[in-house]
Image (cartoon, rainbow, N blue to C red; front, side, top):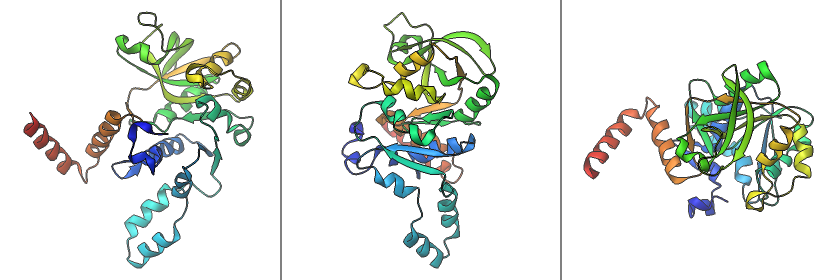
Length: 279
């Protein structure tokens, strides 16, 4: 519902809030396409039809741009569109949790391995997080979770994994614990919002009982799946920004603006002047 961003999200889905000049969800789609994802499935809800409209052609806008010879802008619009037939949209009628949202995509995904990307989390790295996960998957098969290291003192705030034998750019996962009590975490590696899962998880989620927050939790489904299938972790070493929180969203805007040669000088000088003024 994007309640942490009210009143902005009263009319604009949080996934459509912009980081510099692109909606948050565009960064996630770009990451998926870079990794070789063949079909995009968007699980949305009531009031989020603008997401589907965003990934479509807007004839009036494109006609106006053509009339005014705005070729650079036309190229931007063309490049961000998935190819025809590459995207599907389905509704999660009730906000019953991440596990339920994943289950809503079952008939579109079918009996194939699939990736899950949480649009709150956008990442910056020379090689996209999901691309690295796909490379690890090609070596190991099974299920892959992207992880990062956190301050051990903060491990109780995250879903934490246990560390097993090294494999590729990661390691085998020995256990998964959602928000462990302080001092009990098996490591300081937390799950950062990227998953590659086998389709057997759909059958598990179909009968999964509600867990934390009275929601159907994906972590609970993965714990059940882990009894029959292996899980491995891909160690992501880039930067991750939680755009579901105000501070993370602001940091993402600053970080991505500073990566843009066309606006970095102005932004950098402005930030320096602001910091100096505020002390």
